[in-house]
Amino acid sequence: MPHTSAAQQDWPTRGITLVVPFAAGGGTDAIARVIAEKLATRLGQPVVVENKAGAASAIGTAYVAKAAPDGYTLLMTTSSAQVILPLTQPAGSLNYDPVRDFRPITLTATLPNLLVVSPKVPANNVAEFIAYAKARPGHMSFASSGNGTITHLIGELFNARAGIEAVHVPYRTGAQAAPDTMEGRVHYQFDNIIWTLPMVRSGQLRGLAITSRERSQLAPDIPTVAESGLPGFEGITWLALVAPAKTPDNAIARLNAEVAAVIKDPDTVRKMASAGAEPPTAFGPDGYRALLSEDIARWKAVFDEGKIKLK
Image 1 (cartoon, rainbow, N blue to C red):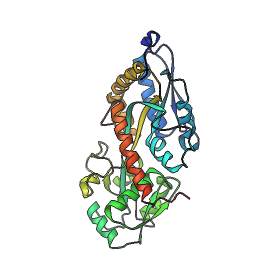
Image 2 (cartoon, one colour):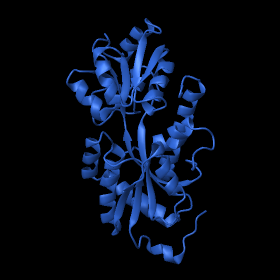
Image 3 (cartoon, rainbow, N blue to C red):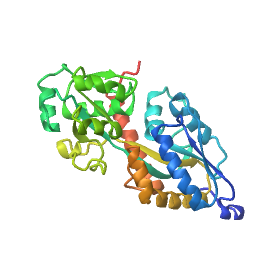
């Protein structure tokens, strides 16, 4: 158990580096910068965002795992870095362990995905869509933002739960796939609500359900997949703040309290919404551990079924 020395009681006494393992300008970066600015005010010390992109987030993640465990180097991580990437890589190939090498501080945001279908598909809800797809085994196709990505996994999980046979069509991004979904060249896809919702509102796509456990504050009129006939279904992207494994208790406790206050601030909620994100429903290390454990089990089961082909 980490110990707190007398010198550590005054943490923080200098600036903090918040590493984002993705390039500047993306959703994770945008949310990290909102939190960093407000956290700096609350801590009375600078909180500088540093982008360390590369290797699908592995470079920045490994950097923080090996950083001094003093509370001055933190990581804004994601479900992709902590769950999906380890599942897609050969055992031992990553320079970090998502559980052993980090101390959780708190979840910071969740990003719900939306099931959208082509307007040419005659289905207005999940039940109608499942019935339509089941009547056409092997003739349905779904798009994703790439092999082994969260949108691919959500699609495979949905197909398995619904009993649908469909061909996976990977694209470089979900937005790149959208024109083909609109025209019916592929029939459906799951992707972030931030860009799919405007297309639903404009009639270019039809939104059937949200993949989060509860309805999204960003689209409260759209039901969840779980309430639409697949109980317990969940498939979200999440962000969390973590520190190197042996970071002292007092730094973790202070960060947890201050970050929770920042995330609940109405201005933060508004800015997160502009990035397609919502505040988490659980805060603190325990909330993070619970979701991490659930996600590892959920997505490992999808891989173990043998439907994910990465090569």
